[in-house]
Structure formats: C-alpha cells, structure tokens
Amino acid sequence: MIKYEIYGGRMKFIAREEELAILEKEYVQPYSSFIAVYGRRRVGKTELIDHFLSSHKPLIFSVTGAYDATKKSHLNNFSNKLSLAFGCEKIVFSDWDEAFYTLQQEIEKVQIGEGSKFIIFIDELPWLAQLKNKGFKSALSLFWNDFASKREDIFLIICGSATSWIINHIIQDHGSLANRVTNIIHLQAFTLKETKEFLLEQGHKSLTDKMIVDYYMVLGGVAHYLKLLDKEKSFVQNINNLFFKHHAILRVEYHHLFATLFKNHQVHEEIIDHLSDTWSGMTLSSLAKKKGLKLGSVLSNGLRELEESGFVIKRQKYGQKKRDMLYSISDPFIFFFRRWVENISLIELRQNQNYFQTIYSSGAYKVWSGFAFENICHLHIYPIKYELGISGVLTHSYYWSAKDEEQGVQIDLLLERADDVINIIECKYHNKEFVIDKSYAKKLENKRELFYDKSKYNGSIMTVMISAYGVKENQYYNELITQSMTIDALFKK
Image (tube, rainbow, N blue to C red; front, side, top):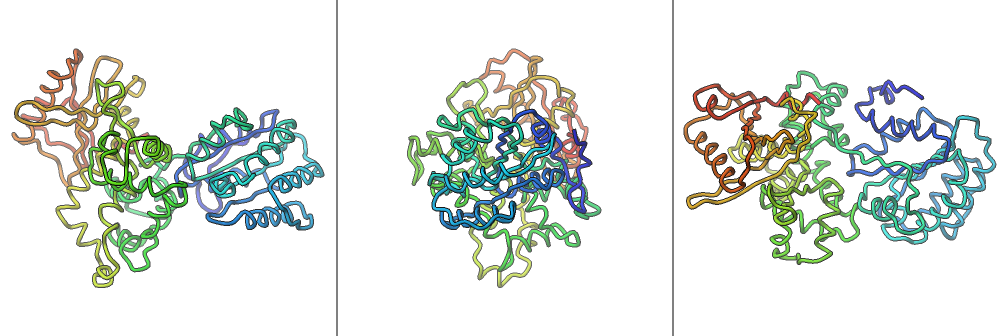
C-alpha cells in the first residue's frame, strides 16, 4: 500500500489522511470498486481525488458535469474526454447508453497490468444527470452491473456537491444501483486544527489561535474560501476584499450554494432565511408557521437535505425523544453572510472603501462573535471532550430550555456523559480574560438549579467554560466552575 507523505503539487497536502486511506484500501482490493464521494460545495472533493489520482496515472478516464448545461453539451464533452483518454475518434452520441457502451469498448482494448486498475472519475455527477435522470443513471447502472462489477480491475469514483442527490440516487438507491457502492466518503470541512495547518502552509505567518477562529467564524473550514485569503493582508482587509468590494468574489457565492445543489432551491433558501432570524434555532412546527413554508414533505425533505449538506444541524432537547427537535444553521459562511453581507447595497460599498472595518469595531459585531463562537464549539465537540479528559467516554450533546415563575433559562450546549455526569458548557468570546461577576454567577446558579428541578437528573452537573483568553479565578469561579479551557483546546484534535 502506498504511504502518502500528504503532498499535493508544490505544497503540502493538508489532512484528509483517513479519506486517502479509504481510496487506497479500495484500490488494492481484488474486485472492482465503486466509491461515492460527496460533501459541501468548495470543500475540496476534487482536490482530494486529484491528489489520489496523481499516484495512479495513466489509466484514467475523467469527466466533469457542468451546472445548467444541456444533455447534448454533456454528451459532447463525454465524447471529447473519451477521445483524449483513448486516442479514439470523436463520436456524436445520441444518448447515455451509447456513451457508456463506447467507454466499455475502449476499456476492453486496454492492457491493464497486474495490481493496477482502470480508474473512472465522474465529477459533479448530479449535474451530468441534470438533477433528474435523462437516461444517465440507467446507463451508469448498466455499465456497472453488466460490465465493471464483473471484472476485478475497474475503479469507479463518482463525486458531487449535491449531497442529497448522491445519497438518494446512488448510495441509498432502491433500483438498479441498490447496494452497489463499495465505499463512501463524506468529505467534511476542515476543523480548526486543520484550518491552522492549511493557512500556515499557504504562507500565513504570525497567526494566533484567536485570529484563526476569527477567520473560521466567517469562512468555516472551507478550503476554497481559505485559499482566497491574501497572506500579506490583515483579517479585516481580507474579509473586506472578499465580501465588501464592488467585485468581491464571495458576494455571489451564497446564492450559488443553493441553486447548484438543490432542484427546488427556493424552499431551501426560505428555510435558511427563517433560521437566520434566530441563533437558538427553530422547531419543525414553528418553521411550518412561517411565510412561504408549511408542514409536510416539502419542508421535511428540505430540512433533511440542508442537514445532509452540512448547512443545518438538528439538535435534540434533553429529556425528549422526538418532540422539540431544534434546527439551526451550522455553516459559518452562511451565518456571516446572512447577518453582515446580504442586505448591503452596492451603492453603500462604493461610498465606503473599508466597510468591514466599521462593522468589525462595532458592539453588534462583538455580540455576533459570541454567538458565532458558540456555533464553532458545537462543531468541535471532540476536542472539547479531549481537553476534559473524556475522549473515550460515550456522550450525547443536547440543548435545553425551561421557564420558572420569574425567568426563562436556556442551555445551548449540554453534554451528557455515560459516567453519570452532565457538563453545562458556557462559551465566551472576549478580547481579554473573562471575569465572572455577581450577576453572571447568579445566572449560572439559576441554570443548574432549574435544570435539576425540571429534568429530575440524578447525576452530577459540572459547569465548564470555554473562552478566548481564560477565566479569572475568583470567588465565583471557585464556587461554580469545574473546569475552564481557552480556545487553543479546540485546536488539539
């Protein structure tokens, strides 16, 4: 088996060791492989596969779907790629059956050495199928079932950003492709640790962990977005250039996210619009009451597809089985865009050359950063567990809320542990050491007391604080906090 040094081109290829190992393990199997790779747009799927393929040339046929292209255009491109890969004459195909049959004929002419496989890489497959059928899926299934799967030397990789389409039509297909996929890779965005490695490899110097968290709040761990950052500019300058200039490249990205991924993307955008109005999230029933939405399969499917694509997270309320499931936005890029970019006109941007500087210095941005940091903590539960020393303990995360006669209490991150402990996790994003004063101490006490009273929990409750620069040890800290950690803990795993 090849041992990867994790280098791609001139620069170090960051992370993805597990995914590369899956591809390599499949490649050496004594049977033909059918691998499905999916994940959020711009997350680095094609780069991952290209890096793997760089070690297995030249037996490769590769074709890529184009958004909003016609069937005729796709067939013409398929023919061009065949001609380039095999040196055969270009053929005008009338349908996908002809195209895949010709691919089969050309592969049969190739001498494939022992221990090698002929690699077929179909990128953005949902676009080739035009998010419908148009004969592509049936032709692919015939090619696989009647030809490729009967051999031992075909390595088929299909890839797509339209996550729900890949899942429904390939991985969980109930027809001719049922149970045909031999392995699955769901490529996730970089973690904070991987983002730090990526930015350092891109040449960014003197980056503090807090600066990286600031970038993560805006861009998440999306490789393509991170690659757009200018290492010679500050955080404020970079974000201003990417979002708040007249020709800012990421100003148009938001709407492409949905139009290119979902057939009925208006529903998905409507859901995101309503979820953007609240940080805590919304239940299915409360969403169904919003304008443009109603309870039923369209709303349920839209939420499921947004969750599968990594844009929305579904959290359960502690003590409930199915009721009170809370949906909230988990994608940092969407969080940022909806709050600070969506409603700014081009006229405003032309009049203000450094628009983001004003936003970044405002109290509103500091408040928003607190919520955004909380979201990042939700995305990094495992590093939190590692820092707590419970990485091997089974846990479940929840939210919880209740009201007494005087006030309402909400716990946004509650970690239930199999060792009869619950952690109430408080996330604070301040520019200096956080100090627990009398007022905040009272709130923490109320949370614990109300949780005990309403939940009837019998185990121990330990309050944990995560902050940018630590928590000052005073009387209230010693009385209420079991453990605290700074943001560097989020970078450890």
